[in-house]
Length: 44
Image 1 (cartoon, helix red, strand yellow):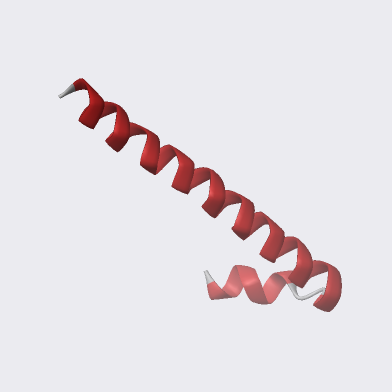
Image 2 (spheres, helix red, strand yellow):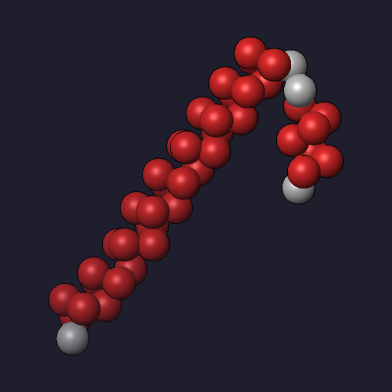
């Protein structure tokens, strides 16, 4: 039971870190290469 709780708790945390890193890297690359930040804001 404790093992399952620990597993379920660690998976979302790890995924969140990876997702945040991917989003940050993608946002940086696009804004650096295309300088189209406003388009990203409009998309969201």
